[in-house]
Amino acid sequence: MPSEAAQFDALVTRIRDSRLPSPAVRRQIREAAKVPMRESARELKVAPMTFLRWERGEVQPRRDHAIAYRQFLDALREAVS
Image 1 (cartoon, one colour):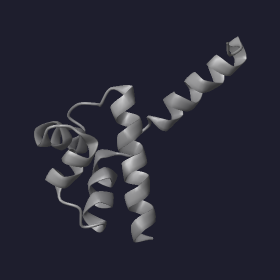
Image 2 (cartoon, one colour):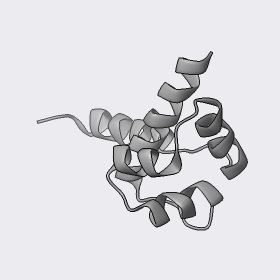
Image 3 (tube, helix red, strand yellow):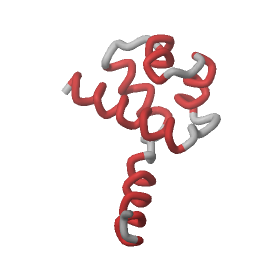
Image 4 (cartoon, rainbow, N blue to C red):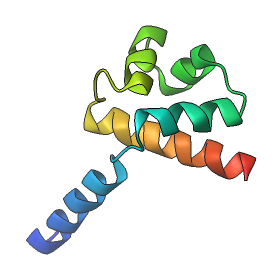
């Protein structure tokens, strides 16, 4: 069983990994990679309207979705660099 310190570190890492760039930057990253919104939604296994709301900053994804979204954005950013 992980120690309390390890559990705390894991929690802090998940919180850090779930932080998203501003809505404008989210869209810029996706558009720079030429990935359509519907394809992005499909990749993240959410409805296109959900993805649109995330990208606009109207709602924030739950932590597990935010982590996946952040990883997706990081991968797109790296792909176009």
